[in-house]
Image (cartoon, rainbow, N blue to C red):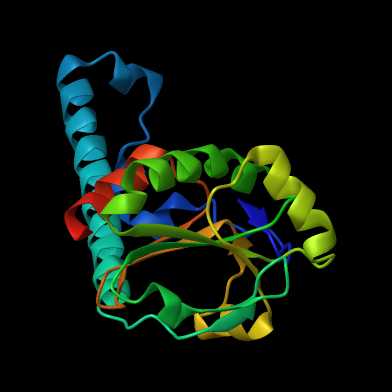
Length: 206
């Protein structure tokens, strides 16, 4: 993903004892212990249990976040496209919307665009609309030629600070929301996601 604001990288505590407790600490073995088959099996089980527990915790947190996002109503918005025409979220009422916050200078954003073009072609007549929200500071002057170059077949509006705040703050791009026919946020992605991921999420909503 391409950060809008480049934060200082997080600092990680390298003390495994303090972060994960005695199980990981006990997994540190001497060379003599490593030569003992019983010790090898025991250490493998300890490490496996630790990895499994960590994965379950991560999955639970991810599921909780997804459920929270899915229960939220998508904010209404009103912006202008590259021609200066007013476009409103209500224009897409009753449709499944892929709302993509992006910019022309963002490599992972560019990587997603061919997939969005394909999805719009394949599902546009079934009730899908992809909407790009450009966060380019230079505005239509850079977005219009970019759209022509890439053959973008879906609407693009010029984003502002209000819409990024209304959607909970867009700290990095691409950030993409899947909005169902009832105007509820069904999914959210921060960073690049392949076309197959979006297709899997929109198909049940159409």
